[in-house]
Length: 239
Image 1 (cartoon, one colour):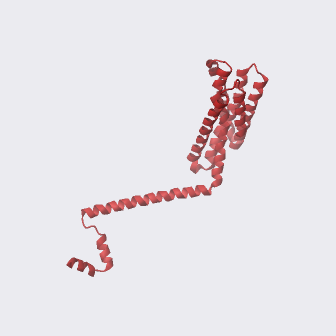
Image 2: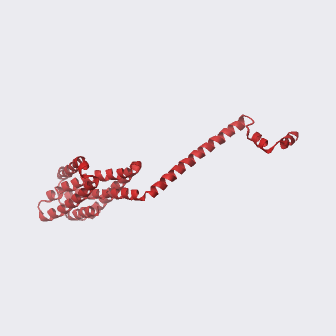
Image 3: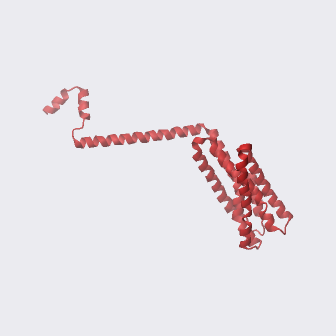
């Protein structure tokens, strides 16, 4: 009681200071734990604030996000190839009666165009620019799909040639379009290049998966390649 009376006689500031001081090892350990938790909470709050500020900056830069998305969705240009990938084996082997070995031999043809398109990008980007090559890639993809339909109708006895040879032009257009669309999406805002790259890859794979499934559905009961070729043309125009 005497100690309490003595404590009450002290000034308020002194009593608060004495109360804050650790009285032993247990109080000291508890005080350290509280300080550690407080520091972690402050760190988490600072991290949340940084994330919020970045989100606010991204929202303010809506035009940048829109441009990134617009260049990402040019990956629709890969849909003709993925739909061909999903439907061509059934068309060639089941509908047209060719062997899987023949299909395998012919399937290397599209790779010629894609490799040539990639090589052209490496040579022409500095001269023509990314945007021009994107438009050239879209135009050549559409032209190749249209050519595929026309020659398949015009030369009915040459089914393998009319199906696979125009794929060179389509793949060449893809070879121009896909690398430049990725480079364009990444270069819009270098600070979020990883996000742009991830978005572009996601869009390409999502479109490719959907196109491959749709290609299989379209030619499920087909007796020729025309439904598949028309689907490829539709995807090319949609790009």
